[in-house]
Length: 112
Length: 115
Image (cartoon, rainbow over all chains, first blue to last red; front, side, top):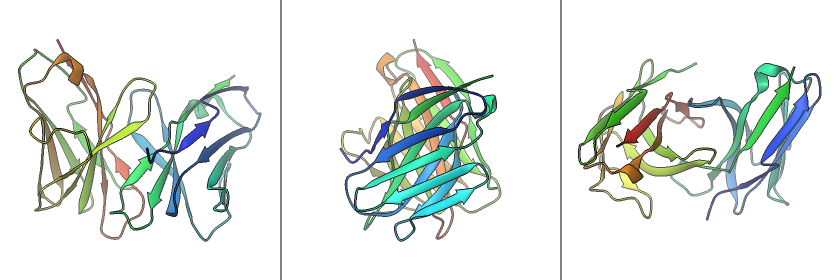
């Protein structure tokens, strides 16, 4: 399977704490993207990091990419109850048609 | 950001009937659209890639005759689940990308329940 793996599968934290999610993939990529999904809804793009980048920030989000380990992490700082959702990494494989392959996802619950 | 509209959001049908799901890009031209299927608490499984004006490319294990995809214009792709059965019950999501775009814009999904 080309799908990446994410851990943890589920994460429960208190509001204000930081949340870290990890993603591993199998082959070389053009870029890696993180998406968020609220229950029963479509996905929303959060951030994209290219294969030649190591770290990227967007607001309270920080993404790292380690191509040697084929892994990425998403850090959400100062979490809020509204951050409760499922988070998926998606990889754009080199030489592919541009389609994304999604990881298994991490379900994050932020308790108020 | 770009908007993708997906309809219907929920459909209940009898076994043996066909269901059509529409995916429209409202404010950009979607050269490529993707259709995904998602089971509860699981990831998205890519079903097919559709390019405007050409036949869809299906992923391994996805039946072309069961899941008919049409991408007749740069703003509309449709997925028709033919002769639906209870095992086809799932959440179907479309996504679209514009020219040279890297990120995807997703519809809000369609929950299909086949009785």
